[in-house]
Image (tube, rainbow, N blue to C red):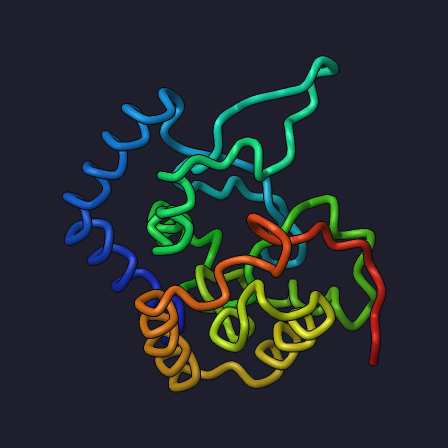
Length: 199
């Protein structure tokens, strides 16, 4: 209950106080990439239940002859890279937190396609609400391996507390300021998870 109240209060304050930032980012995306300004996608929430995550769009909608999206490196724009490196693209997720789909802190909501690829241990990351930031995000983010990242997610599930959440939020602010671990080496964002569990 404390976690949920904290989530609601902070997300509401963030949506109100950061409104000028939201407005400027919306204008920049509209000018640079056109519509839509927001990126919406189904992601697994608590117990794997799908919800629609909302983020600022960072990539152009460019497809190949077969209608498939081109690789991230071909669709990413300079503005998109800036939004990702500063984590400004994540700001609309405060709305997801306010609605109860997400928490401020928790395992990041990944792709629906990953659900059948998780081991039994890895799937435990869905025992709690996903978060805007998490233990894995302040301990390497996209610069660490998938196995390390998912182990940290499960560790958080077993050890989360209000004080740990506060610590993670403080560390997240520091990470954002130094723009650390934004992408995986050799990738614009992060490689696709292919399954596997290395205990």
